Image (cartoon, rainbow, N blue to C red; front, side):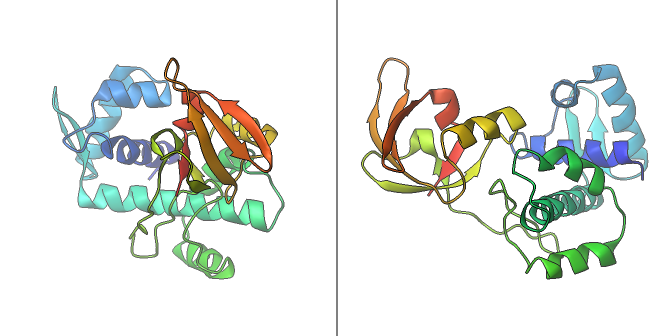
Length: 215
């Protein structure tokens, strides 16, 4: 299986969480910045390998085999991110692109040893759950900061947007996993939030608050 095929399966898996009945080729194309015609060609190729089910105008769904491959790639990606941050001292905004390369190493033994070496982590540096060896994802109780109640002590437990730009913004605001957050006020006009963090007050936009997970 090629790296490109694995990337497609991973993308389809993520999109299917929002569209379980079938992922459109346009959605896939937008997600990976490709042409819809190229996505259609790949969908047909993956269907021939038994990894997806593709029906024109109905979208793409993963077969059990395709889902297994996608989850395996996601597991490797998130384990490598933990390794890069915890063992090599990378910051959380640096690891995604490197893990994109490492996730395609096809050695189950290496992946299992990496998992054991790291102490079987349940979450990656961005708070996303790491599938176990059997492909099972731990259930995380969390909600978006934008939906959280006021005057309640909250803890940052993850991010919805893991792009370097967003993570660098959070670093500037001294927000990371484990940071205590309290919502002081929500502005009705633009839904921005006034927060108490680390002894200081800051204001964040709805775009920011809707990309931070708390519990």
